[in-house]
Length: 239
Image (cartoon, rainbow, N blue to C red):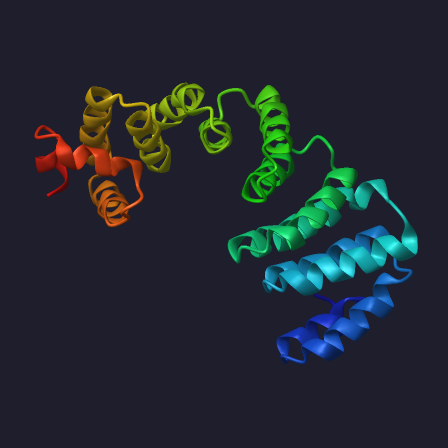
C-alpha cells in the first residue's frame, strides 16, 4: 500500500502490534472518511483476525455516518463474525443483538438468518428459531445444514417424529452430525431397526468421525442411544 494512503498508518500500527494505537487511528479515520477508504480500513482489521475491534469500528462508523448502502455488507458481515465468535463460546445473549443489527443492514442474507435461528435455538426460543430456519429454507431449500438445523429445532421442541425426515435429508447429503441427531430421534421414537441401519451407514460413510461420535454418545448415560445396549443386533456396532 502507498505510504500516503489514509489507511497506511493504521496498518503500520497493526503490524507493529500497537493495537490500541491502531484502534485510535482507525476511529479517527472512520469518523468522516469516504466509503472506499472505510472498506479498506475494515479489511485491514479483518485480514488480521481482529474480529471484536472490527465490529466495534463498524458500529462506530454507522453511529457517526448512519446507514450507507455500499457499506452494508461489510458492516453486517463484521457483526456476524463477532456473533459467531460469541456463539462458539456459548455467549448467545451477546450474539443475538449483533445478528439482529446485521440483519437490519442485510435482511436477505441466508447465513445471517441461519445464525440467528441457531442462536434462538440455543436460547430455547423454539418458535423464533423455527421461523428463522423456515425463512432460510425458503431461500435455500436444498441446503443440508438448514435441514439439520430444522430437525434440531423440531427435536428439541418435542416434535421428535417430525425431525426424522429433516435429519434424514441432511444425513443423506453427507452430514455426519445429522446422522447422530437422526439416531437420537429414531431411538426416542423406538425405531430400533432403522437406528441400527443408520449406525451402519454412519460408520461406513464416516468411519473415523462416526466411531468417535458414537463412542462419545455411548459414554453419556442420558443418551437416547443407550436403549441400543439392550439389543443384541446393535451391541457389536459399538463394542
